[in-house]
Amino acid sequence: MAMKYYGLVLFILCCIRMSWGEDELPGSFIFGDSLVDAGNNNYLNTLSKADIKPNGIDFTASGGVPTGRYTNGRTIGDIVGEMLGQPSYSIPFLSPNATGKAILSGVNYASGGGGILNGTGRIFVNRLSMDVQVDYFNITRKQLDQLLGASQARTYLMKNSIFSITIGANDFLNNYLLPVVSMGTRISSSPDSFVEDLITNFRLQLTRLYQLDARKFVVGNVGPIGCIPYQKTINQLNADQCVDLANKLALQYDGRLRDLLAELNDNLPGATFVHANVYDLVMELITNYGKYGFQSSSKACCGTGGQFQGIIPCGPTSSMCEDRSKYVFWDPYHPSEAANLIIAKQIVDGDSRYITPMNLRKLSHL
Ligand SMILES: *[C@@H]1O[C@H](CO)[C@@H](O)[C@H](O)[C@H]1NC(C)=O
Ligand SMILES: *[C@@H]1O[C@H](CO)[C@@H](O)[C@H](O)[C@H]1NC(C)=O
Ligand SMILES: *[C@@H]1O[C@H](CO)[C@@H](O)[C@H](O)[C@H]1NC(C)=O
Image 1: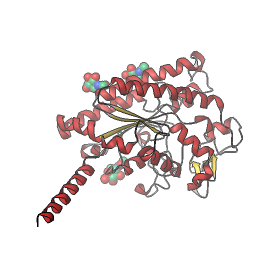
Image 2 (image 1 turned 90 degrees about the vertical axis):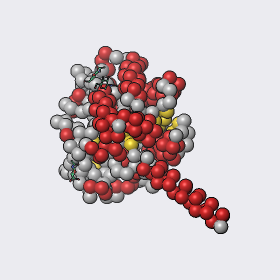
Image 3 (image 1 turned 45 degrees about the horizontal axis):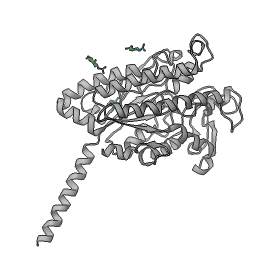
């Protein structure tokens, strides 16, 4: 008899805990560029948009209708959220629906063309830079106080929310490396001082998020931007070559980013900054694509121009590959959903090769 009750009590404890855990894992606040934009640029007057077909062709939640995501299906942010039990995708901040309870699953501030520096992405006319994305989170922060009350809002943000930041690539691609002299910063800045400028700004931005009660951070480094179909095409490289300067700049920034996150882990009490080594992850997919079931890591599945379809972004008049799951790159700049799935899996459950000092599964349980 006693054993029987004991079992029942254990059962109840287990299952109450489990459902509590699920209910309390809602917040995913996403900052960054087109790699994780879920539709903010649909609401901007900008030349950087992904609201035309066939973008989103494999995005089940919209029935294949373009949502503003710069890929054929889910972004890394979407997939990571699913894997961690987020009840629904983080809603774009600029969407008219981003009000009331809809923001309790988290909010997405990412914007195609956006960078750490305010001037980055100027060629697109409009985009949300990281400073503006943090300003917008400050607005959400006040809405959360109203929705949950001050004390619960703090717990929700500090314990049950993850802040992911995927930014920096445009600071090189659409700023420092721009061939148009009047648009880029290269004319007036050495690589060292440009990278230091990025780190100085990023330190302030991450610290502002901390001041607004963010505690669990995952920050992606800049990927091998010299290996994207766009760079390979305009530099007329072979399939197995990458643009040296672009990759070198990315690696230089990535080294300083690692130092910055270590410094913030030491200096901001109660915060955990996790470093996602997107550079090595994507490089592994590009180099050993066959091992992961891909047929090409040099050509864009959807795009136009040159030997890698790498000049004009994906749109209704582009040619599209037959099997989208066989391409590492969806378009001249962005990974396919198939690549995003592999990257997300490593970020959530991978080991110290790609995610340090802990993976996102562990971070979410802290
Ligand atoms: C807003 O929500 C309504 C009702 O759920 C939906 O029909 C509509 O598509 C949403 N609009 C946007 C822009 O997401
Ligand atoms: C960038 O713009 C934001 C908002 O417009 C402003 O608050 C910030 O000071 C600017 N940053 C720099 C480095 O100019
Ligand atoms: C958030 O906004 C308030 C004004 O509403 C301002 O006083 C505060 O400095 C802002 N916080 C950050 C971190 O930007």
